[in-house]
Image 1 (cartoon, rainbow, N blue to C red):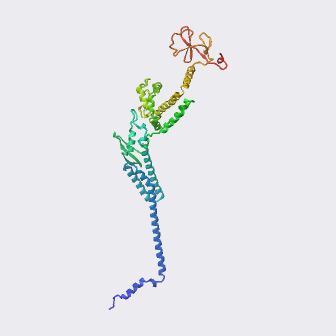
Image 2: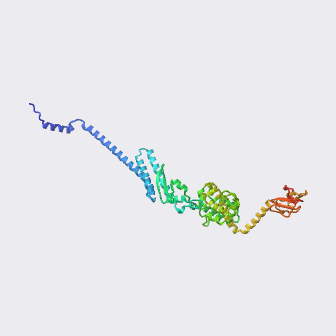
Image 3: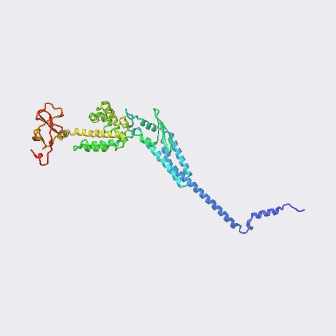
Length: 429
């Protein structure tokens, strides 16, 4: 029977032969090439990985550098509401940025981050500006006009007594006022309702005052133009609203100026009869109640007098402001040069009296056909030609620049006046 037991010596020899490749021709030349290729592939993979990790670290570093400022500025808010919302927004943008695998998506994420930076910077700046010391008195409640609601909203916003949320991609601040009213406004809407002091216009008027009040060569029209130019531009309602409510000169606001000017009271009563905005019942008399209401309406576009028409308010307000402030400069000038004003007033009165009288050299034909020079007769001046007492036959009367003669029936007949012609009657003496 054949012996099937393994020969251990033969098996050991075969194993050694497999391990020792010296007896295989060219084996090492191929093997070292394969090993080198593997090493190179591993090195390339390592470099790629390190590069990817470096790029990721660089992306995070650049993103964090941009986002650091917005997170720092949002930390200035009193409550955690704004801070937390801003942190969540920035974190979401960062996630999108790191996940972006193309330049377009990366740029989109960076733009979104910059928008958040700009928004927070604007919000912080607005909160810093909208403090009570910068708010115009125009926002304060006033009898028969401004209710002061917008001031309450701004105060609530400044105290961060609100909830903030994102609606259609924009922050909305929602709060509740003491009387139970609620508000939901964006930053842009909050900026629209706040009215800031703007002393630049009062400063401009005071500059005109200092330049003109003591001028010897004084032109009322020039002063009026300068005063007009010192005011806010037409259509700048909030600036005009603030101007007439905040101090203008000597710590007086415009309402105080109006209240002390009895002369202006007379002008309003005389000039605005049957005006629907002043003489509200249009009975031809501006009574004290209507006058008081109008003075308040002049400084408040919210007055019911204007029926919501801000342009109409501006029209009346601007006109009265210019008149009042111009007269203020004129009155100061009169105090310095009283004699000049007396002379000018006298000349003005004489000019007014002569304005309606026929010019020298004009002629008229009397009732009996006699032609006379107008300036050669001495008519009796009367205010009302329809109410003349003690009419005398043949007597001449003058009223409103017209000449009348009494006939035999003591009726006053208007005489036709013939204007002088060059080189003719106006050269007669």
